[in-house]
Length: 449
Ligand code: ASP
Ligand code: MG
Image (cartoon, rainbow, N blue to C red; front, side, top):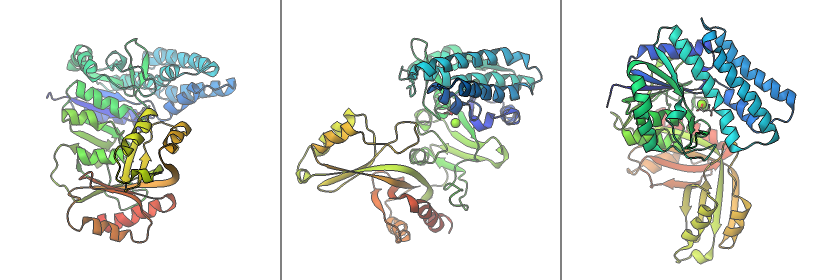
């Protein structure tokens, strides 16, 4: 592996001139950082999504475009030489205005990706210039030349081998002499159309790029100083975790700790690239290293909470001592592209939770056609308003482990307990109104002793 570091900065890290300057200082402090991946400035992607959904009211449309212009102009105005990027950024803003008008007549996933990509395209122009003004030999690079994806607009999948090949040809040579500043979140398909990897996808971009250039490290700079034993807003005594394994961190990312996009670790694990998570606002506070191997593997590592769970229970007497029933159920789920998260079974019933597959923020729904088809096999019950509590740790099969966890939870109703499939994870559902209390109680008992 080469001494080659990739640093990714999230939206809040590049929100304004001061924030961008802090990013530059972090880059300047590590001469091994050759590649910088940036999100759009904070709030920008949301505004672009609004436009992409089609704003009929012309006045509102103009107001949103103006808001976008204001966010970027406020930073440009503080540059020593605004003229160096003004033209480029304003051209992108013009294209936003015309695409927004087109979307008000007819929106499409392809047009949406074209529009929402503009946030990263603008932020990287400005960040690269700001870095140059601080004396860094920085060059902006359009990652669409390298990050080849399929044409599943809105949630495109990267073509890893092709990305590696293109990185070798176009990106690595540039990084040899300069610090390259490029976009997270976006890519392009074979036809050259802009695609995106899904909301929050720039962590994943950074990991894909780090893999493609065989980086020796990936830093994810965000607005929290690393991974904590649980969300400190829920349990104020939550403490930072200096080091955590890939397996533990993957469980955390999958089970709701919002700190990393769940796919981020996949390329890092494939390539054994250590990942650092820290706050660009307070880099001196340190952060969390995620690696293959760590010094300490405590039994209780962290607690994650994910709300808005949908639980589906399927019951049928025909299941009794029969075979093939689950296969039929999963055939239906597969047909409707429904991804299942947790599952537990009894002799005549099976309960499962639905994975969140869209970006709406609401609870996933079992759609009607799928439900009707399942009802031909069994009875179907759907429950909402549940939260998933995940306890992440090590050697969970050890004597007394479950007792210690569940004796703490004597006062709560627990639903659907999943224990045993993973060495690193025990999870269960609780009713939404008590979920925070469950986290607080468990944290106090297992982590604050
Ligand atoms: N700007 C994109 C978003 O807000 C991607 C990212 O920041 O990760 O979803
Ligand atoms: Mg983000």
